[in-house]
Image (cartoon, rainbow, N blue to C red; front, side, top):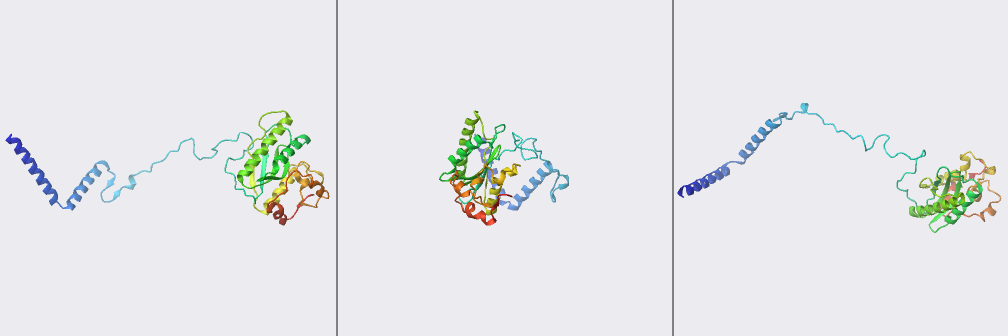
Amino acid sequence: MQSSQQARTTSAANSAESCCAREDRAPRDDFRLHKSNTESWILQHLPNVFIDGGIDMTKTKQMTLEYPEWGGFRAGAGRKPATARARVEHSARPRVTKHTPVHVTLRLADGLPTLRQGRSHRALLDALAASASLDNFRIVHYSAQSNHVHLVCEADDARALSRGVQGLCVRIARALNRLWKRVGKTFADRFHSRPLKSPREVRNTLAYVLKNAQHHGIHDVGGIDPFSSSSWFDGWNPRSPALEVLLRYCPLPRARSWLMTKGWRKRGLLDRLG
């Protein structure tokens, strides 16, 4: 019993002496001890490290990062087009305001009859007239080719443009499928749109749309394409003598934006015979 008490007394005395020794030791001694321990660990585990000079860069080697063979940006990557013609990109639509007309292109699916014949054009024109004049969407001019349609539209914003063109596509698809006695997809892709922000852009687009038949090698007498709204266009030079009569039967509404009514005319009227 006495031996155990003596052992506890001796242990307590030793602990007290060690604490006093730690208190008497200067902080610099702790730093030297830590430094010596660190140096011994480095010499044991990192033989390429010099105590005085740091890391020996002549013995290090840059690691290479191997890229996988699939995924990521690379030449030829991405989804391939399902047809020979590239589809319209599914990117954000450009900003549209009521002051900027828009050039819209609709393309038919492959293998369908041409739009440049009497009954098909009549069905197309009826659909355009039914969808042309809304509170926030208007179709001002159009041109029908064998497998695509060009439109010049006015819309209050991008949402009104999308809703108006989507409704028009539904009307055209139903009318043409009923005429051609078929079912299925009518348009090859989503519509393509481009806002027109300057008088020069508007003038060039009007010339391209109303003379699109000439662009495809079809030349009409007098420069008037019967499968377009060029008969009701009042910006030709020379002016058609029967224009005032034809405007009474125009199924499309008049333009309202400054660019479509006055702005583009500052760049000169369109040459009807050229």
